[in-house]
Image (tube, rainbow, N blue to C red):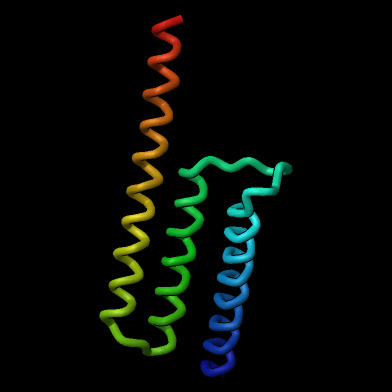
Length: 99
């Protein structure tokens, strides 16, 4: 029973990772005029995929160093997202002060 639950969990994580990767590829296409996404949202999506992949690899007994490296990259992309969001907020505040 535990083996079935573990396989189901791995399959579910693989499906979520695949859906997120397809979303990232769709959002990164420059020719798409339908959806415009800010860079902070895009970086958050990449960080989320890094976290999901690290959980997936941790479940399947992959090297600890590789899992920690993915979590580090997740933190880097979350930090980039925060920097972009804060810069965007500062720019909008500066425009209001000028006007």
